[in-house]
Image 1 (cartoon, rainbow, N blue to C red):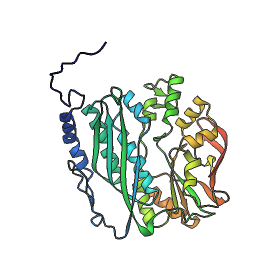
Image 2 (tube, helix red, strand yellow):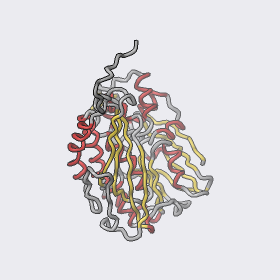
Image 3 (cartoon, helix red, strand yellow):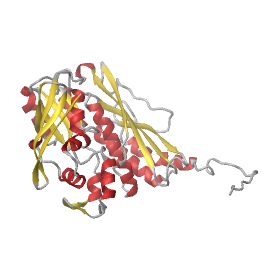
Image 4 (cartoon, rainbow, N blue to C red):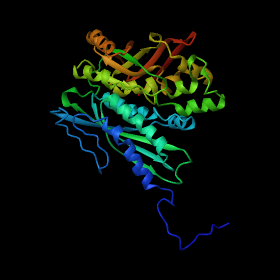
Length: 368
Protein backbone atom coordinates (compact mmCIF):
# COMPACT_ATOMS: atom_id res chain seq x y z
CA UNK A 1 0.00 0.00 0.00
CA UNK A 2 1.38 3.41 -0.96
CA UNK A 3 1.75 5.77 1.97
CA UNK A 4 -0.40 8.87 1.56
CA UNK A 5 1.62 12.06 1.80
CA UNK A 6 0.23 15.51 2.50
CA UNK A 7 1.71 17.38 -0.44
CA UNK A 8 1.26 20.71 1.34
CA UNK A 9 2.98 19.72 4.61
CA UNK A 10 6.07 21.63 5.68
CA UNK A 11 9.18 19.47 5.76
CA UNK A 12 11.94 19.81 8.35
CA UNK A 13 15.21 18.03 8.98
CA UNK A 14 13.73 16.74 12.25
CA UNK A 15 10.83 15.12 10.37
CA UNK A 16 13.41 13.32 8.24
CA UNK A 17 14.94 11.93 11.42
CA UNK A 18 17.81 14.33 12.14
CA UNK A 19 17.68 16.62 15.17
CA UNK A 20 20.03 19.59 14.94
CA UNK A 21 18.92 20.60 18.44
CA UNK A 22 19.98 17.22 19.82
CA UNK A 23 23.33 17.57 18.11
CA UNK A 24 23.87 21.01 19.57
CA UNK A 25 22.89 19.75 23.02
CA UNK A 26 25.46 16.95 22.70
CA UNK A 27 28.23 19.40 21.80
CA UNK A 28 27.33 21.52 24.82
CA UNK A 29 27.37 18.44 27.06
CA UNK A 30 30.72 17.09 25.88
CA UNK A 31 32.58 20.41 25.65
CA UNK A 32 33.80 20.17 29.29
CA UNK A 33 35.02 16.62 28.61
CA UNK A 34 37.14 17.84 25.71
CA UNK A 35 38.39 20.85 27.66
CA UNK A 36 39.67 18.52 30.38
CA UNK A 37 42.06 16.95 27.82
CA UNK A 38 43.88 20.23 27.05
CA UNK A 39 47.66 19.96 26.80
CA UNK A 40 50.56 22.14 25.63
CA UNK A 41 49.92 22.90 21.97
CA UNK A 42 46.13 22.51 22.10
CA UNK A 43 43.37 24.12 24.11
CA UNK A 44 40.86 21.37 23.20
CA UNK A 45 37.94 23.77 22.69
CA UNK A 46 35.11 22.41 20.52
CA UNK A 47 32.87 24.28 18.10
CA UNK A 48 35.07 25.48 15.24
CA UNK A 49 35.44 24.00 11.77
CA UNK A 50 38.81 22.53 12.69
CA UNK A 51 41.23 22.17 15.56
CA UNK A 52 44.60 23.86 15.84
CA UNK A 53 47.77 22.37 17.27
CA UNK A 54 50.98 24.26 17.92
CA UNK A 55 54.01 21.95 17.59
CA UNK A 56 56.37 24.66 18.83
CA UNK A 57 54.35 25.04 22.04
CA UNK A 58 54.54 21.26 22.47
CA UNK A 59 58.33 21.51 22.60
CA UNK A 60 59.35 19.91 19.28
CA UNK A 61 62.31 21.12 17.23
CA UNK A 62 62.68 18.70 14.29
CA UNK A 63 59.50 16.60 14.40
CA UNK A 64 58.01 14.01 12.12
CA UNK A 65 54.22 13.81 12.20
CA UNK A 66 52.68 10.35 12.48
CA UNK A 67 48.98 9.69 11.89
CA UNK A 68 46.76 6.71 12.70
CA UNK A 69 43.09 5.91 12.50
CA UNK A 70 41.10 2.90 13.68
CA UNK A 71 37.81 1.69 15.07
CA UNK A 72 36.69 -0.75 17.73
CA UNK A 73 35.17 -3.40 15.49
CA UNK A 74 32.26 -5.56 16.62
CA UNK A 75 33.15 -5.02 20.27
CA UNK A 76 30.85 -2.03 19.81
CA UNK A 77 27.96 -4.47 19.37
CA UNK A 78 28.66 -5.99 22.79
CA UNK A 79 28.59 -2.51 24.31
CA UNK A 80 25.28 -1.74 22.60
CA UNK A 81 23.60 -5.04 23.43
CA UNK A 82 24.51 -4.81 27.12
CA UNK A 83 24.22 -1.02 27.60
CA UNK A 84 27.91 -0.73 28.52
CA UNK A 85 29.05 2.42 26.73
CA UNK A 86 31.40 3.99 29.29
CA UNK A 87 34.67 2.32 28.24
CA UNK A 88 34.26 1.68 24.52
CA UNK A 89 35.72 5.14 23.90
CA UNK A 90 38.89 4.12 25.74
CA UNK A 91 39.20 1.24 23.26
CA UNK A 92 38.86 3.69 20.38
CA UNK A 93 41.66 5.92 21.64
CA UNK A 94 43.85 2.97 22.61
CA UNK A 95 43.74 1.41 19.16
CA UNK A 96 45.05 4.64 17.66
CA UNK A 97 47.57 5.84 20.24
CA UNK A 98 49.13 2.40 20.70
CA UNK A 99 49.76 2.37 16.95
CA UNK A 100 51.48 5.76 17.22
CA UNK A 101 53.72 4.84 20.13
CA UNK A 102 55.18 1.88 18.22
CA UNK A 103 56.59 4.47 15.78
CA UNK A 104 58.08 6.33 18.74
CA UNK A 105 55.47 9.08 18.41
CA UNK A 106 53.83 10.96 21.27
CA UNK A 107 50.06 11.26 20.64
CA UNK A 108 49.21 14.96 20.33
CA UNK A 109 45.57 15.26 19.37
CA UNK A 110 42.55 13.08 18.70
CA UNK A 111 39.33 13.41 16.71
CA UNK A 112 36.39 11.01 16.83
CA UNK A 113 33.58 10.07 14.48
CA UNK A 114 30.32 8.84 16.03
CA UNK A 115 27.65 7.64 13.59
CA UNK A 116 24.14 6.51 14.47
CA UNK A 117 20.64 6.30 13.07
CA UNK A 118 19.09 8.45 15.78
CA UNK A 119 21.06 10.49 18.25
CA UNK A 120 20.47 9.50 21.85
CA UNK A 121 22.45 12.03 23.84
CA UNK A 122 22.70 9.86 26.94
CA UNK A 123 24.48 7.13 24.98
CA UNK A 124 26.66 9.43 22.91
CA UNK A 125 27.77 11.36 25.98
CA UNK A 126 28.74 8.13 27.76
CA UNK A 127 30.80 7.09 24.75
CA UNK A 128 32.55 10.45 24.52
CA UNK A 129 33.26 10.32 28.26
CA UNK A 130 35.33 7.21 27.54
CA UNK A 131 37.05 8.89 24.60
CA UNK A 132 38.03 11.83 26.80
CA UNK A 133 39.30 9.44 29.47
CA UNK A 134 41.41 7.60 26.90
CA UNK A 135 42.86 10.91 25.72
CA UNK A 136 43.82 11.85 29.27
CA UNK A 137 45.39 8.42 29.80
CA UNK A 138 47.56 8.89 26.71
CA UNK A 139 48.27 12.61 27.11
CA UNK A 140 46.60 13.78 23.90
CA UNK A 141 43.97 16.48 23.41
CA UNK A 142 40.47 15.81 22.11
CA UNK A 143 40.26 18.77 19.73
CA UNK A 144 37.29 17.85 17.56
CA UNK A 145 35.09 15.23 16.04
CA UNK A 146 31.95 14.54 14.06
CA UNK A 147 28.57 13.28 15.17
CA UNK A 148 26.61 11.89 12.22
CA UNK A 149 22.89 11.19 12.57
CA UNK A 150 21.86 9.09 9.55
CA UNK A 151 18.32 7.65 9.63
CA UNK A 152 18.02 4.38 7.76
CA UNK A 153 21.72 3.60 7.88
CA UNK A 154 21.71 1.92 11.31
CA UNK A 155 19.23 -0.20 13.26
CA UNK A 156 17.60 1.40 16.29
CA UNK A 157 20.14 1.85 19.06
CA UNK A 158 23.15 0.97 16.90
CA UNK A 159 26.16 3.21 16.38
CA UNK A 160 29.69 2.96 15.09
CA UNK A 161 32.93 4.69 16.00
CA UNK A 162 36.11 5.75 14.29
CA UNK A 163 39.08 7.59 15.72
CA UNK A 164 41.86 9.67 14.21
CA UNK A 165 45.05 10.59 16.05
CA UNK A 166 48.14 12.57 15.11
CA UNK A 167 51.41 12.32 16.99
CA UNK A 168 54.95 13.59 16.65
CA UNK A 169 58.44 12.22 17.17
CA UNK A 170 61.78 13.92 16.90
CA UNK A 171 63.43 12.67 13.74
CA UNK A 172 66.29 11.05 15.67
CA UNK A 173 63.91 9.07 17.91
CA UNK A 174 61.62 7.51 15.29
CA UNK A 175 61.24 3.74 15.53
CA UNK A 176 61.31 2.13 12.09
CA UNK A 177 62.64 -1.34 12.96
CA UNK A 178 66.04 -0.88 11.32
CA UNK A 179 67.87 -1.26 14.64
CA UNK A 180 66.52 -4.77 15.32
CA UNK A 181 69.09 -7.55 14.94
CA UNK A 182 69.76 -11.14 15.99
CA UNK A 183 70.36 -11.37 19.72
CA UNK A 184 67.75 -8.74 20.62
CA UNK A 185 65.53 -9.74 23.53
CA UNK A 186 61.73 -9.55 23.33
CA UNK A 187 59.83 -8.18 26.32
CA UNK A 188 56.06 -8.50 26.58
CA UNK A 189 53.62 -6.17 28.33
CA UNK A 190 50.39 -7.77 29.52
CA UNK A 191 47.03 -7.11 27.95
CA UNK A 192 43.83 -6.42 29.87
CA UNK A 193 41.84 -9.02 27.93
CA UNK A 194 40.77 -9.44 24.33
CA UNK A 195 41.39 -5.71 23.71
CA UNK A 196 39.62 -4.81 20.44
CA UNK A 197 40.28 -7.64 18.00
CA UNK A 198 38.68 -11.03 17.48
CA UNK A 199 35.19 -10.05 18.64
CA UNK A 200 33.39 -11.52 15.66
CA UNK A 201 34.72 -14.88 16.84
CA UNK A 202 33.95 -14.07 20.50
CA UNK A 203 30.36 -13.08 19.66
CA UNK A 204 29.89 -16.18 17.50
CA UNK A 205 31.01 -18.37 20.41
CA UNK A 206 28.76 -16.48 22.83
CA UNK A 207 25.78 -17.16 20.56
CA UNK A 208 26.55 -20.75 19.62
CA UNK A 209 27.51 -21.78 23.17
CA UNK A 210 24.69 -19.79 24.77
CA UNK A 211 26.95 -18.06 27.27
CA UNK A 212 25.32 -16.55 30.35
CA UNK A 213 27.07 -13.21 29.94
CA UNK A 214 25.47 -11.53 32.94
CA UNK A 215 26.54 -14.30 35.33
CA UNK A 216 29.94 -14.78 36.97
CA UNK A 217 32.69 -15.73 34.57
CA UNK A 218 33.51 -19.46 34.81
CA UNK A 219 37.16 -18.52 35.38
CA UNK A 220 36.64 -15.52 37.70
CA UNK A 221 33.92 -15.36 40.36
CA UNK A 222 34.68 -11.69 41.03
CA UNK A 223 33.19 -10.38 37.77
CA UNK A 224 30.61 -11.26 35.16
CA UNK A 225 31.57 -12.77 31.85
CA UNK A 226 30.44 -9.66 29.98
CA UNK A 227 32.63 -7.48 32.20
CA UNK A 228 35.63 -9.66 31.36
CA UNK A 229 34.87 -9.42 27.65
CA UNK A 230 34.22 -5.66 27.60
CA UNK A 231 37.38 -4.70 29.57
CA UNK A 232 38.98 -1.79 27.70
CA UNK A 233 42.19 -2.02 25.72
CA UNK A 234 45.29 -1.04 27.68
CA UNK A 235 47.06 2.19 26.74
CA UNK A 236 50.86 1.85 26.87
CA UNK A 237 51.91 5.39 25.92
CA UNK A 238 53.01 6.81 29.26
CA UNK A 239 54.96 3.66 30.18
CA UNK A 240 56.90 3.57 26.92
CA UNK A 241 57.48 7.18 25.90
CA UNK A 242 60.31 7.95 28.38
CA UNK A 243 62.19 4.76 27.40
CA UNK A 244 61.80 5.59 23.72
CA UNK A 245 63.21 9.05 24.31
CA UNK A 246 66.09 7.47 26.19
CA UNK A 247 66.81 5.52 22.97
CA UNK A 248 66.77 2.11 24.64
CA UNK A 249 64.09 0.47 22.47
CA UNK A 250 64.80 -0.94 19.01
CA UNK A 251 61.22 -1.72 18.00
CA UNK A 252 57.68 -2.07 19.33
CA UNK A 253 54.82 -4.23 18.09
CA UNK A 254 51.21 -3.51 19.05
CA UNK A 255 49.48 -6.91 19.17
CA UNK A 256 46.17 -6.35 17.41
CA UNK A 257 44.44 -8.21 14.58
CA UNK A 258 46.86 -10.89 13.41
CA UNK A 259 47.97 -11.60 16.97
CA UNK A 260 51.54 -12.38 17.93
CA UNK A 261 52.29 -14.23 14.71
CA UNK A 262 51.57 -11.43 12.27
CA UNK A 263 52.22 -8.24 14.23
CA UNK A 264 55.77 -8.89 15.45
CA UNK A 265 57.14 -9.48 11.91
CA UNK A 266 55.74 -6.09 10.87
CA UNK A 267 58.56 -4.36 12.79
CA UNK A 268 61.38 -6.74 11.80
CA UNK A 269 63.92 -6.14 9.03
CA UNK A 270 64.64 -8.85 6.49
CA UNK A 271 66.75 -11.67 7.91
CA UNK A 272 65.28 -11.46 11.42
CA UNK A 273 62.95 -14.03 12.94
CA UNK A 274 61.19 -13.77 16.31
CA UNK A 275 61.10 -16.81 18.58
CA UNK A 276 58.44 -16.60 21.29
CA UNK A 277 58.51 -18.96 24.29
CA UNK A 278 54.89 -19.55 25.26
CA UNK A 279 55.96 -21.02 28.61
CA UNK A 280 57.32 -17.61 29.69
CA UNK A 281 53.92 -16.37 30.85
CA UNK A 282 50.61 -17.82 31.95
CA UNK A 283 47.95 -17.70 29.29
CA UNK A 284 45.13 -15.61 30.81
CA UNK A 285 42.13 -17.61 31.97
CA UNK A 286 39.89 -15.69 29.55
CA UNK A 287 42.07 -16.80 26.63
CA UNK A 288 42.04 -20.40 27.83
CA UNK A 289 38.27 -20.20 28.16
CA UNK A 290 37.93 -18.96 24.58
CA UNK A 291 40.28 -21.64 23.27
CA UNK A 292 38.45 -24.43 25.07
CA UNK A 293 34.98 -23.19 24.18
CA UNK A 294 35.82 -22.97 20.50
CA UNK A 295 38.28 -25.87 20.32
CA UNK A 296 40.57 -23.29 18.71
CA UNK A 297 43.90 -24.50 17.30
CA UNK A 298 47.02 -22.80 18.63
CA UNK A 299 47.83 -21.33 15.21
CA UNK A 300 44.39 -19.70 15.13
CA UNK A 301 44.75 -18.41 18.69
CA UNK A 302 48.15 -16.86 18.02
CA UNK A 303 46.99 -15.02 14.91
CA UNK A 304 43.58 -13.94 16.24
CA UNK A 305 44.10 -12.91 19.87
CA UNK A 306 46.88 -11.18 21.80
CA UNK A 307 47.11 -14.25 24.09
CA UNK A 308 47.84 -12.03 27.08
CA UNK A 309 50.54 -9.81 25.54
CA UNK A 310 49.31 -6.47 24.22
CA UNK A 311 52.70 -4.97 23.36
CA UNK A 312 56.06 -6.54 22.50
CA UNK A 313 59.37 -4.67 22.81
CA UNK A 314 62.64 -5.50 21.05
CA UNK A 315 65.67 -4.46 23.11
CA UNK A 316 69.42 -4.87 22.72
CA UNK A 317 70.51 -7.45 25.30
CA UNK A 318 72.74 -4.96 27.13
CA UNK A 319 69.73 -2.68 27.71
CA UNK A 320 67.36 -5.34 29.03
CA UNK A 321 67.97 -4.74 32.73
CA UNK A 322 67.50 -0.97 32.53
CA UNK A 323 64.41 -1.27 30.34
CA UNK A 324 62.86 -3.86 32.66
CA UNK A 325 63.57 -1.60 35.65
CA UNK A 326 62.02 1.41 33.91
CA UNK A 327 58.89 -0.57 33.00
CA UNK A 328 58.48 -1.86 36.55
CA UNK A 329 58.86 1.72 37.84
CA UNK A 330 56.03 2.65 35.45
CA UNK A 331 53.78 0.01 37.10
CA UNK A 332 54.11 -2.46 34.24
CA UNK A 333 54.75 -6.17 34.76
CA UNK A 334 57.21 -6.89 31.94
CA UNK A 335 58.08 -10.44 30.94
CA UNK A 336 60.94 -11.66 28.78
CA UNK A 337 59.12 -13.76 26.20
CA UNK A 338 61.65 -14.47 23.46
CA UNK A 339 64.47 -13.32 21.22
CA UNK A 340 65.42 -12.42 17.67
CA UNK A 341 67.44 -14.89 15.63
CA UNK A 342 68.80 -14.92 12.09
CA UNK A 343 66.34 -16.40 9.62
CA UNK A 344 63.43 -15.66 7.36
CA UNK A 345 61.40 -12.66 8.46
CA UNK A 346 58.59 -14.02 10.63
CA UNK A 347 57.57 -15.29 14.03
CA UNK A 348 57.42 -18.69 15.72
CA UNK A 349 55.60 -19.42 18.97
CA UNK A 350 56.40 -22.66 20.77
CA UNK A 351 56.71 -24.19 24.21
CA UNK A 352 54.30 -25.40 26.85
CA UNK A 353 51.68 -22.72 27.42
CA UNK A 354 50.64 -22.39 31.06
CA UNK A 355 46.88 -22.40 30.86
CA UNK A 356 43.88 -22.29 33.17
CA UNK A 357 44.49 -25.37 35.34
CA UNK A 358 46.79 -27.20 32.92
CA UNK A 359 49.49 -26.92 30.26
CA UNK A 360 49.25 -27.31 26.50
CA UNK A 361 51.81 -27.65 23.72
CA UNK A 362 52.06 -24.61 21.44
CA UNK A 363 53.84 -24.69 18.13
CA UNK A 364 52.94 -22.29 15.35
CA UNK A 365 54.71 -19.94 12.98
CA UNK A 366 54.23 -17.24 10.37
CA UNK A 367 56.60 -16.07 7.63
CA UNK A 368 56.16 -12.84 5.80
